[in-house]
Image 1: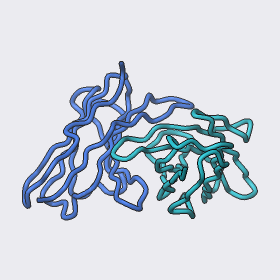
Image 2 (image 1 turned 45 degrees about the horizontal axis):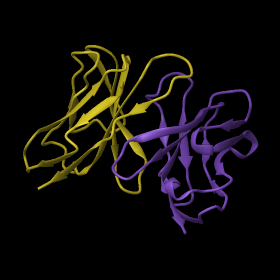
Image 3 (image 1 turned 30 degrees about the vertical axis):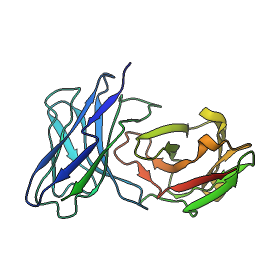
Length: 113
Length: 114
């Protein structure tokens, strides 16, 4: 079955440590997105990519980095510069075109030790 | 800038009763409108979307939503709620091109009582 796979499901970060969240899709989608979800808030866009080897900052990109070396993969690194990283992170993807919809992964919960 | 308001943080409905979740948006043009549902610890699933045409949109799981331009609203409804509908519901507003400008509301948590 096609879909989006996020791993790990739970991740713990020590102070000063960089951690990487994985997002893989086998839907042959062009565009991929990373969102951050905090309790009581809506989803906020961190980064997005519409084509391989290109990506754009979203609304809250500070303290995060991404890469898009392959169409199916869009890993997110939470760097030590992100001072409040505890959140639920969601990856999404879509084809580029009219009337498309976002498909979401099942998320990664990141917590600080 | 576009914005989305979901005024109800929590709603409790008895099983079998009808449901209406409110969503108001602020946007200068006709937006793309979406409703998503999220179960605890899971990703979001699209319930329905409105791009143009008929203002009453049918979605999955028996949900529907009505776009009312005069009220800037896109309320989600279901005639008879099932216990499995308990989840968090998000309204989202987007531009006509691309999802990078998709703005989500803060969500409404639906509780279903027996």
